[in-house]
Length: 56
Image (cartoon, rainbow, N blue to C red; front, top):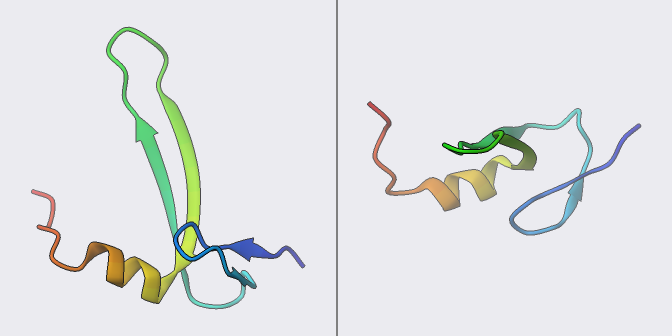
C-alpha cells in the first residue's frame, strides 16, 4: 500500500483514510501550464482554508 505525506504537516497517512486531494494548475499566458498534485489531512485542509471566501 502506498503511503501519502501531508503537504502541510508532512506527517504520513494511508490512502484509505479521509483526506483531501488537490490539483493545482499554474496558468501561464505565454508558456505551457503546469499541474502539481498535493494531498493533505482533512484537518490540515480545514485549518488552511478557514476564513477563505467561496469561489464564485
